[in-house]
Length: 336
Ligand code: AHM
Ligand code: MG
Image (cartoon, rainbow, N blue to C red; front, side, top):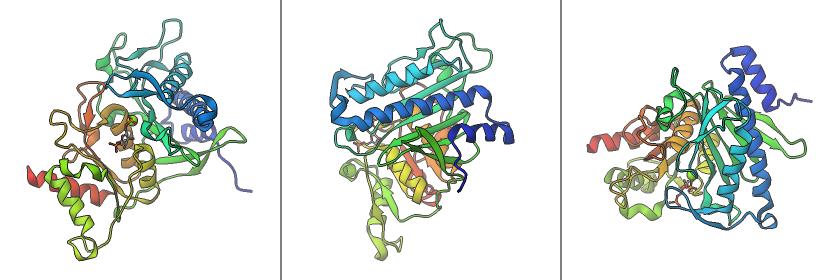
């Protein structure tokens, strides 16, 4: 029988072999994984568990909150606040940062998350997920403020997501490649199912919300038009399209078989950079994708080089197979 490696075992072995997962970070990742298991249980209950539908409130971005958005946010906070590994947390569902209460020991790490990504898919039984990003509190800073979170994605100590689909899969990087763990529901543990995940450099599959086409900037239109022209067009090959409307599920497909994902800036929102959030959606996904040999830009610059100016900052996102991301980015830079 092949040896089954649990997430705990994997992290301990990584710590022993490479020494790059400090004890506190290992604890943090395990706690996040445990919270994801609890969220998976709520997601799986669906209509039987009073978890579907709206909660009758709005988050800081003016979006209607679903019951599961709130449940997942609470599960992540409760699981993480007492362990002593964190100084503070930030979430898509909370306006300001969440300080670890004084009654608990304070740690060195900062945790950011989108507790339930792909909210529009909750009620229709389509894959959704949790995205998380881990930073270290800047050295010498007393207390914690929002400014401490405003570090570029290249400073992330770890990042990952958990996709709640036909399988529940946790995907993780601590800066040494990407590993995938599948939840064994009988045993209640995440089991290593793929190591050293690699995104092919080339692809014939793109993911974009085509209904926004009339609002796109010219370089986005050029890129997609060329894909749609198929074998007879300048690309000389036929492209396929997928759009799940859960970034977690779209990125999971790209990590599994390649592809390019785009949520570009468009003319509907002249003053906003895009729809997706830099700190807890784009940065963690960019870290994973780069660690798997892919690329991630805001159509002009590397996402992980961007210096955030606020917690809930939005950003245009182009990520996935390297050669396609470079092409989309080149089209934008040529236009400038
Ligand atoms: P959410 O965090 O409120 O769920 O929004 C983010 C989601 C992404 O998962 C997905 O890629 C995108 O929004 C889908 O947007 P659209 O409905 O415009 O296609
Ligand atoms: Mg989201």
